[in-house]
Image 1 (cartoon, rainbow over the protein chains, first blue to last red):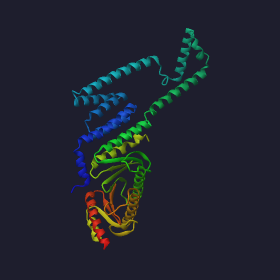
Image 2: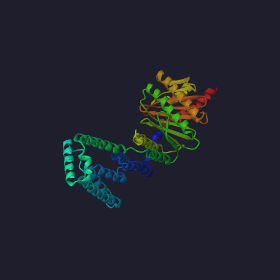
Image 3: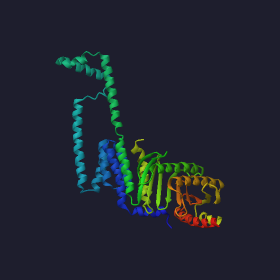
Image 4: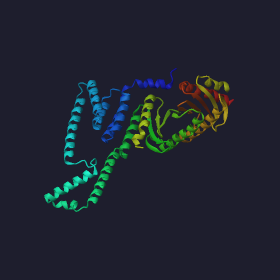
Length: 306
Length: 115
């Protein structure tokens, strides 16, 4: 007799369509990160998708765009070759390459224009900066520009201080840009909502809930009539009580818990300090549920930005 | 009662099985070490109590079956109206067989406890 998990894994293997749908969730997550400017996160999600389906075009296209954005030309070229060889007549692939190449040209043009008009004051040594300010002052005086009074009347030590301050502001400004790579509360909620919706789409799943290990509800999409607060408190207690005893029994770490009450099943998964509870009917593809829950737990810290 | 419990402990990978009251008191057991049976009994009784408080009382018709999977082993328990059967297994044990057996012996034990 095969074990329950073997049976269910076999049934999972037979459902390629569902697997592709579940993997596309990663591509959607990657797209969100890409839009947000978090290209490295997007690459991670694309790679996770490709681990499940090695020739997933959507993931490869996005991966290519990320490589381009990060200036990883060699990786981008390799991905381009791979995509063309796998999809020689695909118009979507060709259109993407054309779009990306056009946008690269535009970006280069804008960059060149900016470089020509704006000196790189961050990398310029301070004495050269003062020198260039002197030169600018001279130029302004010679042109008899009325605006020159502000700078020309300023003592040199104040000018150096002003330059220092400007440098600091530019540096802190740069930091702010990288901080905005984090997802907003709405985006996080949408991602979690989508993830739970994907789980709930599996045939036989009645609802799902994500809680913090202490029992605080992060997001829930459960069946009507089920008190999510009570359920989250129970799930948290189950792990809390079990972990202590499991440790005494030298059984390692708890991976998951399965509960069967009448015709309802509850699958609990724990990882990264979070618990996912999935309520199902009697017959359900446990293999698929297992994969989805594990994927969500693996990435939940990134999604929540903790 | 021991003979009934041994139907489960004879399955390869099973380290022990115990029948306990809802309060966690040991009714009977077949365990390879005493300490494990006490820890498993206490844990299972507490979890079962919490589940019944939240999800409703376990009855003979609708028992609560739970499996705790850990990295080095598994604990399976079945909570009925009067008693709980708990089984401690090694990692590669066939949980499907355990689940079927535990339900079978629950029926037998219920008959034995009635006598």
